[in-house]
Length: 230
Image (spheres, rainbow, N blue to C red):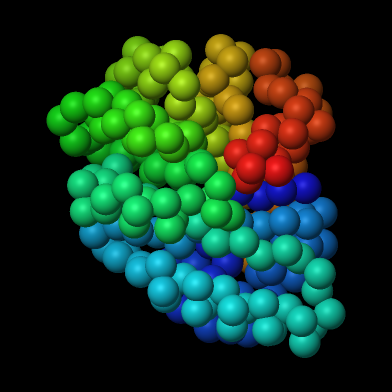
């Protein structure tokens, strides 16, 4: 299975704090059936993770995984806050795509969105990027502006739902929104958004094999592979 959104890299954001924790988290991901994980450290005002930091941390983690005889394929991308998109030109964005493909993981706004959010996403698409919106079901902005999310999807953006949202890990409101998005055909990917072993653990199990509207696992896998350019 492919996990397009997870925080596995040591010491770069709010994921694992050191290499040992990162290896344990990656091993748990592998045990959960994940064969390819795209590490997506935050690029935000709070965590301005440089691509060099991410790549260095990935190499460090790959070494730890080799020593642990773990065959998890580790790729690199970024979870880019929509509020800092303006800091990155097209070549810099290209460096932050998921696994070196054409897909950018854009963090859905939790509070207010920047003015002209639809044009911001449109401009990325004009530049040749596919836009994958991270956890829109957890976005207070999209809760109160559902028509904007529908408009973005209608124009080609895609939505990545956190597996834990279907399981109720983020509360009833978020679970209900995840189910609503799936039923409306607005759920295109399921990712773990794992940060740790306890509160935000690895795994892509949504808690049920029959979430109305959610694509079946083979379809989700095919979409994930396509977003990686495979």
